[in-house]
Length: 417
Image 1: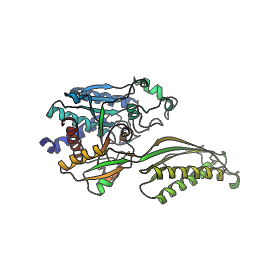
Image 2: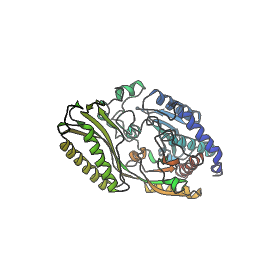
Image 3: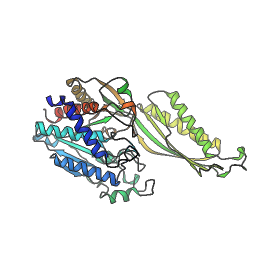
Image 4: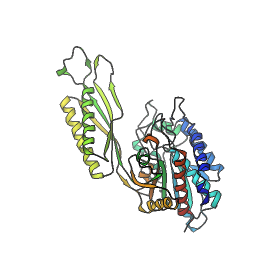
C-alpha cells in the first residue's frame, strides 16, 4: 500500500481531527473534560457522527449511546463484521489522546480504505463507545459492556455523580435509555482491533514504534469507608480517640508497602482520599479512600486482594473504627486473541516497523470484548509515559504509525480472502 508511506499527510489528518473533537470539553487551563452524557460528550458524539456520514458510512446510535459507522461488505462474507474503535469520554481535566485516538484512528483507517479500495468483502465498522473511564459515575465500561450484553441495569439505576445527578436521569436527558434485555447479542463480530496510546513509558524507553498487546491486567477498584468519632482536637486525649485519618493513613501505608513487596507487575494505588469534617481543630470521624489494584495473573491478583481486605478489617479493629469496603470494579486479567495478535504482528513486519510484544497495565474496552470476540490492541508511545493529564502527548509520527498498522490489519481482515 504505497499511500501508507505518506506519513506526513496521515499525521496531519489524525492530529487535526483529534484537535477538532478535543475542542468539545476543552479546559481553558489545559486538558479536556468530557464526561458520559454531558453536553460536551453529546456534542463530540454528534460531530463524529457527522464526519462518518460525510465519509459515506452508515451511522447509528444504539440504545445507550454507542456510536457506529459502518462500511458494508459486498460478498457472502458481508454478514461478518470487523470492528475497530475506542471511547471518547475522559477523566477530569484529562488529555486529548486517551480513547479518542482509537476512535479517530479507526475512522480514518476505514475512510482511507474506502477511498482507495472501495467496498470490502466483510463489513468494516467504527465504534465510539459511550463510556469507559468511570469518571462521572462509579461504573466503568458502560459502552462496551452494553455491546456484549454484560451491563447490568441494577448496577447503575441508583448511582449518581458528584453533583447528585442520577445516572438514569443523565442518560435519558441525553436521549438514550437502557437496551432491551430481550434483544439478542450481536453474532456478526469476527474481530475487534483497538489502537491506543500506551499511557506508560515502556515503548518510549525501549525506542519502539508500536506495541502489540497480548494481555490486559485485571483491575479492581475499592471504596473504603471508615466511621469513627468526631471530637475536639484539644480536649480528647490521644488514647480515647477514634481517629479515621490516622486509621486511613495506617491502612494506606500497609497497602502500598505490601504492593511494593509483591513486586512487578502488581500495582496498587490510593488516589482519592476524603476526610470529614476536614477542619484543623477537629478529630476526624469519617474517612473514605479508593484502592486501585492491577495484575496480569489472576491467582496472584486474588491473593493480594484477599490479603489486603483482611488487613484492612484487622486495622479497623485495632483503631476502633467501623469499616465498609465496596468493590465497585472487578475485572479479571484478559488474554488477547492469538489470531488477531498474529495479524497485527504481520502488519508490523510488512510495514518494517520496530515493535514490542507487551501487556497493558491500563484497562481498555478490549478486555470487555475479548471473551466474546477475537481481540487485540496496538499501542503507540506516550511521551514521558504521561496520561490522564493535560501533558498527555504522542508524536504525530507515532500516531500515524499506529494507524498504518491498523489500516494494513483491517485491509487483510476485510478485503482479503
